[in-house]
Figure 1 (cartoon, rainbow, N blue to C red):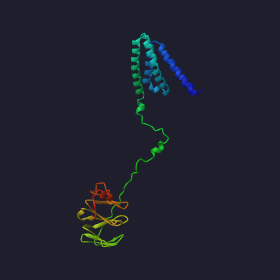
Figure 2: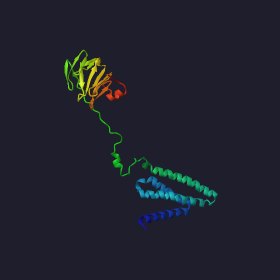
Figure 3: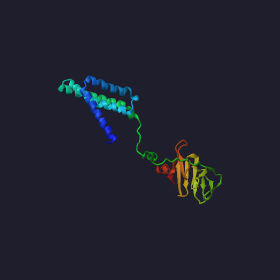
Figure 4: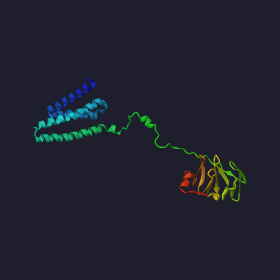
Length: 248
């Protein structure tokens, strides 16, 4: 017989002996014994190791049937005696359930722990798409008095409230200042009186006139704009998708 089986046999023999003892003793002797066990669990929890506390709980659970059997035997063993024993069982096990809940209150409040060996890997697994920090490159506005060098098309000139590019294209009704994107793909100018922004995608050969929007900066060679300086900038692609600007 293994040590575990010997311990299990010893436990069940002790439980049976305890049950029989309370059954043969007068109920008025068994009741104080059970109350003393309950008082020890309530008043001395800090002095009881887990194994001893479990033994006392088991003694209460298995001792109650013995006490009830002794009670019905003392009442004569008739129908009324068994009724009193059943009522005592209902009350007694209800009190035991309340005692168990009170003793285990700290376990219910304790945070859940993970025992799975895969938890460290799960904790390091990113949830959802990785966040991207967008940092706009500042604008470099250039004031144009007459002629300005264009990084891609040679020179451009400003006259009659508009820019004339080297290839003959004209951007009209804008102020005499412009800004190139870092790689010069985009050209940006402000509409007269600060009423908005004109953008020219020279790679895609498309123009955008965005009334009421101000250029905030460049990110990955794309323009970002906002209504006011304190607003969150938005990418041009978002504005075009919501029809906030129009393509000339």
